[in-house]
Image: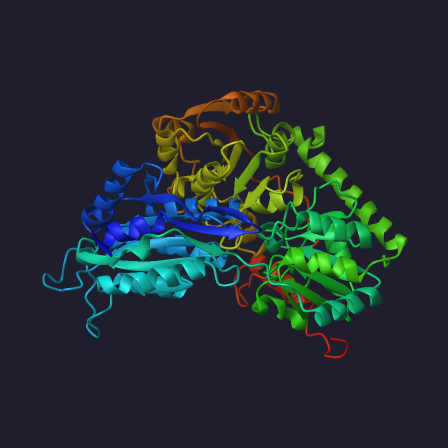
Length: 636
């Protein structure tokens, strides 16, 4: 039996009956479809989504977005909040609408988050070429702008003929539900093919369940890992995002409590343990705590769990300074398991931790080491207290109406509920949050730091709220990121999705300003100022009223200029029914506490500036501590 539908109608019907399942828990794979229509998809996917909505509004709900890049960010955030078991599809028109999604695709793939991207494409028949917005290649007739998706997609296909759709869709679902291979999946859809009718086999539209596996570790590898752990005197766990996606938090806590091994966290792994757990030493690396970084420097064994060891986590490969340091890498991806010449335990994080806990039954690291780790964490906690509530010698130097960024983070952290979610992505706040945020819930911390994409924050907050409607979502965004992408506030109003936007105004790029200064570039080009009479951008601050801009979207705004006002605003926002924003101005010159770590950003080797020459000398000195982490083969 067959059913006659257009390619777009078949696609929508297929997506509406796909499910994922893990541990016996089954859910729809696609919660809906974000989209912006243009001439490339309005008659194809636009008509198909309308028809589906009229038949059953719950089958594949459509959400009208305002920016193509940001809707992919929302889908990524949703997928992360749902542990990669659910996602959204995203459709855009031909040309600029589609290529606007390339950055979103890159973010999803870098962070290994499943998102289905459906860019519209040129006419497959070429009867009217070149059509509006078509790129003409002088060297190939089958190239379109959508080929830009290839390097940033985990799977790419283009459906030139209706017969190609089933295989493209099945391959797409395979990748989207694979914990190793997942990322952005792109199926380019020529605009004429979208509207073309075809007789489809009915079985294409039967409910299909994709099982998300938990690969088990090899017993012999677990024993080797246990041997290395038993031989270690100063082991350290680095918990990454794989702990969250595996829902291995309980297994990690049991392992840490049984062995006494302290747990440090990457950005993606923050929340693996509560901040006040005896084995928790907080963030590690370039944006880490002094506690975790002190332990990392002396660690003779690093147990990486679900981490890809990005440069911030390893402090650009200077974090682990013990000359004999070894690595045991628990990861579902063999690619990550073999990093730093480590012993690869290729398995699901939860299953590997359960096996390791059993293999190490009765063994525990020396009490002296555990106690010293706890003491270091307690010392850092005092630093956090002083940053959340700075002493008078700090606040007394602030101009009237200004707060420190630490005060803002402290107020949100202390007055939000444990189950609330903080969302951030770029600027100085992700680093400050990694160091200072006290996580009380595994899902309470959502910072996109794989791609660290400016503009992700509001769109990401939207996705988190869609994934967790019972949680309040605090979006922390600086003025730099806000000005790059704020349009999804309109979508929040449209869908009545409550997100609490804390808009921090510091008149420029605070993070890059501080980095620029440390590199000898004197914060050049990082402040929002008028051009002066001498031709330089060093005049007065721009008179930009961001609060008024937020109000223009139909969002209530509370402007605050003191910690007391901020506290009251947070209480008001918590009680609100829809999207709401808090506007606060901070002093960009008051930074977070030092992590006693380093990040590799090259400095000009030749310069006429004294500041740059001094920074270059400091850079060369720091480079001396950089290591390849090539452990000896013996004992592996």
